[in-house]
Length: 86
Image 1 (tube, helix red, strand yellow):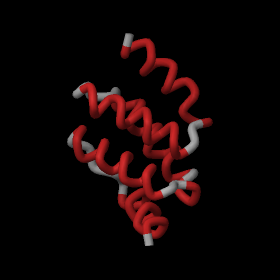
Image 2 (image 1 turned 60 degrees about the vertical axis):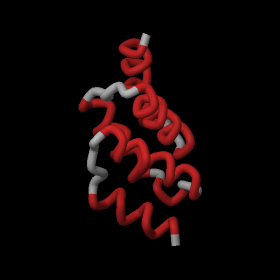
Image 3 (image 1 turned 180 degrees about the vertical axis):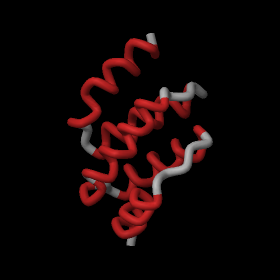
Image 4 (image 1 turned 90 degrees about the vertical axis):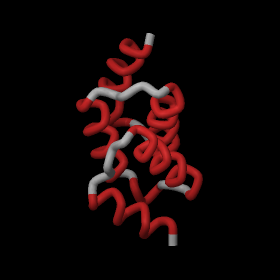
């Protein structure tokens, strides 16, 4: 099931908004499943592209998911999220 969801997410992640990015990463982290490198790279790229639209809850959920998954957000993503948070 998750493999199919991951494949679909990779296919459409370029259209993801901040809420969808946060929810997808949160789901993997909550289930204790590691997303593929392709999915994580795409999510990070899309998060940077839409970082100006992140709301505080999206930021919190996304960063929690990165931490829980043992992933490190890019410096560009962190800078953008910190800018949005203040």
